[in-house]
Length: 508
Image (cartoon, rainbow, N blue to C red; front, side, top):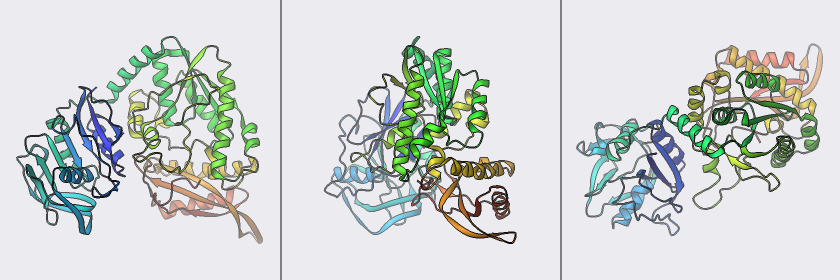
């Protein structure tokens, strides 16, 4: 298929560039700048991302531009623009003051194909510490701001374009127009990356890859594994065997309700009650990373035992999505581990199964669009993300059945309250956290000393960044009262108003 290659120099916005290109129904892939893939004839253009590095630094990222510059259409963004200018003999130096935030284009070469349809005064978003003071010979300015003369340029005689601002962020009001100009008018993309196209191609490829082999897949109740299961089922029918494990860390009644939903969809699903096994391995464990590893190992053990009961199963299906893949690699080697990811990193040697990951190329919002195109019920497609280790990482400290029960009840009141108030679909993710402290309270005429819970609700697009939701005060008051009045053992409710970054969405 037609492809745009994005070379990542470490920018926080690289994934956003990819998502904006995908929204134009054009397929793209992100690759580290030092791991450029083979540029086959289906590659229609290349994008250089921004970077936290200065192109003047000794360790500045330096790409191999052979077969790219002057051969393929190229759009260089921020660091990419500075690097190309310096590479050509121009002068890039540190700005007198950091150029960060909103700016307006004061002059535009409207005859340039990249700037078509963009008018003078258009707002753009700057985020750079260096600036291009002088362009090399043969580099022609195509737009400027009041303080940045060389805000955009084209290399004469080439389809090589560069801009100092970020068209992928929503603050750049004509960013979508600029990207459309590059993708369609300059690269000649036909915008055929659609949900229906993806489904047809994927099902065809799965049939060819899997043949009559059996596939075993672990369902979680989440969007990713559900959509992956339906796609594989469309390809091989009952040769897909799904396993839904109750680890005792799911939401209230989730095991029964989700299992019923899957059976209504015609999926071949087996439910496994393994609560006591998980509670046993978590007993006394308080370190978050050790909890994750204990849960992950136990799940694999339970899953492997069940998979062995399926004669001649050769494949393991997973709901791995593109951000999982991207975050498992980085520009300057492995990134610092913030938390273990359950979908990336391979399988234990004793699991003699090959991986099949039909969603490996998709972002979360694309997975939802595919799911809706497949006709999956909205109650599954619209579900908030839920952590793989479940409520274990929302219980700070050790995990016990009693604590799980308390948190399930609190979480149920909060989530059902969001649904009843028409707020659920306005929130990207919500949940409750059981804190390892107790507080003094008064109920009736008696003093209490009971548990504290925190509620968390965030707005986000893909989970990479998030802001806390400004839920109505009367709603929060009602939920707090209901929790304290109906959940024995809780006498105080707090609300988390931290954004990501610096905080993460989950507490552990």
